[in-house]
Image (cartoon, rainbow, N blue to C red; front, side, top):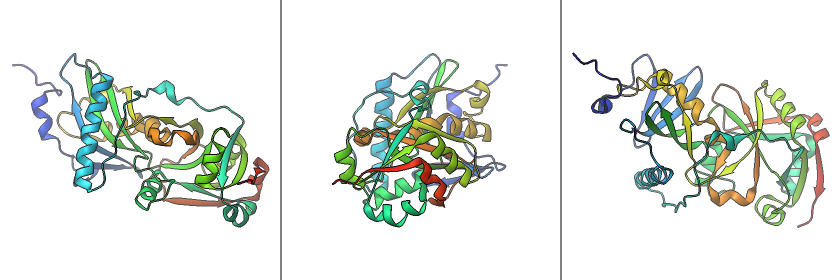
Length: 300
């Protein structure tokens, strides 16, 4: 008698969350998995047949179709997406440059920066800001389409990740200074990245901090790999092991990639990982941070 493979495609429609796992179902979105205070959203997913691999163009087309479906279900205007490239792990190397730059308004500088106040944001806050019409908003923050190679198959997910991350955004240089002043404010702050990031992390009681460049690609499609042990239960149900694997695998594109329409921002991003879902904003105050921050330009 043939042993049934956990990859049998006819079993996909039997996916269900085992009762011991902490899954919430949201209409038109998918499952959100909670474990140890940290979550991940799992939406569209599919498995290829044996020895079949999606091309980059096919992955983009798949993601585009899913986005049109989501736009319709959510009743929001559809965006036009352009295929540029598929992201890979080598795109997300640590950023070693000494300085980053922050553009703020005069009011923000006078009321907050001079007193040592700085605000950390969640990715969810940036998603909400777009709904509010804020220029800093991006409804794709934290999202990614991830294609994992597992033996001779591709396993593809649409995901929302990075719920455990405090974010502080800067720009890497002053190449687009005029546009950045117009968007965010005329005051230019030069920030010593490494000591500033370490002190931010200390102030929120963490030591897991990293600084990376943001990469730009519409729909944020990413290729990675997953072990068969993490993925083998997929054909029957979402398991905690699978959810944790996709949460790990989605971290880089979810947190350090943005759509191409933001490319002029040339963003460098400080991420403080807590292991726990974070609130929308976290404000810190420490005049000691000002040792690493210098105002260099106030011209309009």
